[in-house]
Length: 574
Image (cartoon, rainbow, N blue to C red; front, side):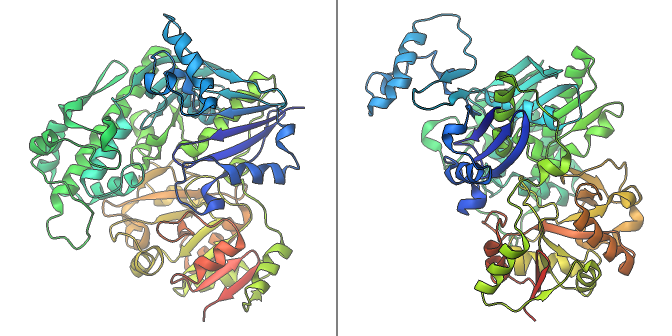
């Protein structure tokens, strides 16, 4: 029997995951427990939660797997740390650093550490390999090309690899500082948003563009800055400063870029500003270049390998606009994007690799079991929490028609249902729901609940059987991973979820993945004739999604929601 814990530490959204005998058991991001959105530190609460839920202690763990391999820095001597350790424990780094800096031609792979007295060893795996194993084993593919793109790993910012029957082979990679993710982040910052955080806001901005000539002009300039040389992403760093140690938290761009584009950086985006169009056009041009590079990488990998099943992973795979075009660019191929391609999924990828290494065959997981991974709060736990809060409530007794009716009457409802979602997107268990027929639903959600920028869209959660009637070139999008075009005849029927360019980032809802959410949308369809709901994450701006009943109650009373369905209990402000 083997117990393996995967750890995503010092990454964007720290997390941990448990595999037992090659079977996925549980995973949770640290931010859900410490309530610090995007937490990057060590996932202490997450690991303790996993051990408690599984009736294990650290002594029961056979392997601790970390999705970052610091040994990749050993080849070059670091005199500041290795010659003068500030703490004696740094000898664990300093001595290997000295030895390896004297050695030539060593390609540093996985690193292991064993401490007598602790059963489990520590294994440090390549970051992009963890991304790729996560996406491969969550997919249904036996063989796949895996395109891993993000800001950066240890040294790589991109890995093009194949996994065939579980065997990993890297075809090529790009080294820091050239990075598609950081290129996109720099422009995110230029337009007044926070890099490493608000890239999806910048992505949504491009939909407001309506000057094709201006977009083309920007695109021509951007073509000079970033391009592909075979598989290698080449970025002209004379325009960027994010690789300089003194700019962390400051400007990622140099004056050269401002001069080239003839555009002034914005310190903070303001919806009320008068001259915004030029930033819409720039965002569109950057998005087009992003898509062009992804498309070229995929085309070359298919040409070189003949494999037509592809996973896209890493933080760049959160770009749902690009994801929604993959099947149109390559209609004879199959694509898979996991529900958490960002760094939160690293713990799962690391645990998979570790389980394989100690001889446990990896069992493929059903979608519902790797989407919803949190604690399943039972009736008594929820009821006790409600009573402790002194709230009045009604037992809804799974009367989904009642909830659907409330939504159809214009009410905003917080839904707390079963286990929480592991990824950043709410998929029906920790969701805020509204009526898609009313444009004011979007306005109200932005102003009274989410407190966010006016231009940002909301997602439709749509019944699988009807999705092809609503979206052009439809493909399943179970994790809100794709943006698709809404058909002409549906745009006026569901204005709350249609973005400025007539697209929507949809969630496909099926009975087998989330039965309760399906029943609710089906009840709304029966009342209104519309087989979808507005679905957004159950959180306030700047906070992570709610995890437990107390989080849900606090959030409910901190914003403009009308009702909260907490398990089977309905709480009202009215």
